[in-house]
Length: 454
Image (cartoon, rainbow, N blue to C red):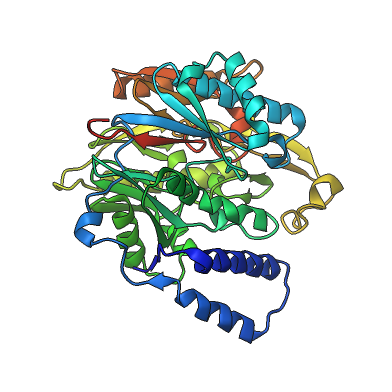
């Protein structure tokens, strides 16, 4: 595996800047002369080392603890209105209110650190106080560039029980291509490094490209989508990707799921169905709740009468079969439990085609006529829950006017989690406007492990 040297200096800053501009020009079809590419490649080779900045025996002690282990704090990002993916003002206000509700509930039992641009600290403080947060347990980490889904670019906290370190995946903005990605996305990949520098924590930059939401772990096992990681890391073999991910998280065995459901694709999913997504994140579809039990989302047969639902159902059934065939470190099968999957068609927004949407994204909607309608679906899932010290925050979707079947699915998901976590309070939170941004509760939070003696 290759590691970027921790002796950053001008090497890191210059290489990141050059890469950002290269991608920016490339996506706008600007042609480069070969000498420029050769010079950049040569320069970057001087920034890369073939060994990590510590011995392998020391690195093996650090791991990402399962989420049900004790936590020191939870992080959450407060995203200003202009950073929320073309949402109208009323929807932006609603998604910020959801963040405030999450912080308020968490702050009853654990410290919460809110990452927020300096100009919006007062706004965040007013909203959190109004939501009933315990302000003595809320702190702010001021950061000019904030990623809406903080779990994905970082910070990724690893622990050896006594100390923390931060590891950072290669960041390519979820693999999005232009126009769904622009140069402003790239600096968000440095958030973990900023926190590490401010707190004096060691940091490692990994070669493999992934995100926090793309990996699910128990004490020893890891689950990930194979197709997503192959696509994102074309220069690596599956064996190299697997080894890199296991080493990054301090785990012993990988369980690959071959295919990502279409509903997690960003942009066009299938047919007239569109929406944001993370292009291969396990935290929307499969989650460990103990070292022996894993939950997997499966649609109800009555909810598979659309092209998107049918396509997803076939992949989800394949994922379930692969999980049922998997074993733990002792060769024992896992206890696989089905979770309901929300009816995305009932939650969709119907958008008329027109310049208001085609002008910013002409290539994304090229298959449709102006008279067409498109369906914008949320990244809604009961699997995007957050396990914290005394609570489990789970998404809920039913509201007045929606089918009763959605309320039934809400209650069924809450009951399954209550059985899995009898010592924690199960807290449903209505998250639909967050889901329309392509993620959910788990995506927009990140736990920091508690150290022994802390």
